[in-house]
Length: 308
Image (tube, rainbow, N blue to C red; front, top):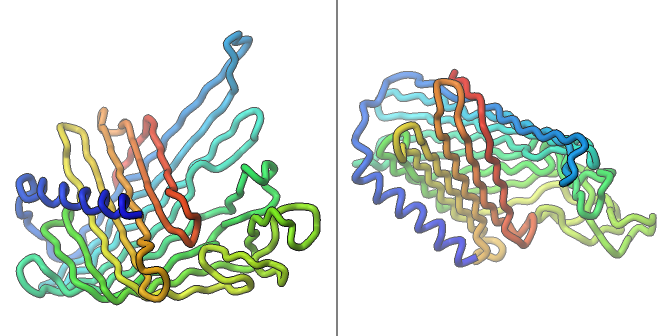
C-alpha cells in the first residue's frame, strides 16, 4: 500500500512540476462551458482452417467523457460524467462484458485567495449491469455485482487548488463515504455455508458470515468518515497526443486509516484525424473492502471519436 501512495504522490508531483512550466494562465469564460467526447472501440479476429489455431472473437467498447462547467464571478461549478461499457464475444465463452463504469463528479467552488477556492465536492460511482466471478462461476449464474451493487457516494467540504480546467486538485479532510448494495448480491464462500451444493451464497442469507464491499452480512449500507484528496491533470504530450490523469485517495478515520483507497486512471488519445484515434486507458484501483489486491483495467484499440 505504501508503494501505491508513493506512486500517487509522484504522479501528482510530476504533473504539478510539468504544469508549472507548460501550462499558462487561461482566460476563463463566464456562464456555461460544455463539451465532451464519445468514443467507440472495435476489435475483431476470425479464423477458418487456420492450422496455427485461433478463436473467433469480437469486442466493442463505447465511452463518454463529458464536462459541463459554470462560472459566475467568484463562484464555479464543475461537473464531469465518465461512462463506458464494453462487451466481448467468442466461440467458447459467449457474450461477456469487458468494461462497465459510470462516474459523476461535481465540485462547487468559491474564490478564497490566489489559486485556492473553498470547495464542496460530490462523487458517485457504480456500474450498469451485473458482474460475475467467472473463475469460480463459469456459467455466470450468481451475480457478485450490478447496477448500484455497489454504489459509492462520496462528498465533503475542502479546499481546491485550481490553475486551470486542465490542472487542479482538491483536499477534503472531513469527507463522508457511503457504500450501498441491495439484497441481490452473492458472495463466494468455498465452505458452502448454506449447504446447497454451490460455493455462492446471498449476502442477506442468515448463514452468511462474509462482508461484501465492506458491508456486514445482511446489511445494505456502510458509512465512513475520512480524508479525501483528488487530482486532475490533462496535457498535450506532443502533436496530436493528449494525456489525461485522474487520481483519488481516501483514508477512513473510523477503521484502518492506514489502508488508503487508491484510484488512478490514465487516458491517452493519439489522434489520427478528425474522427479516428488510437486510445489507451489504464486504471489502477486498491480498495481492501472490495478485494485485498491491486485491481487493474486496461483498454487499447482504434477508436472512432465524436465531439459534442
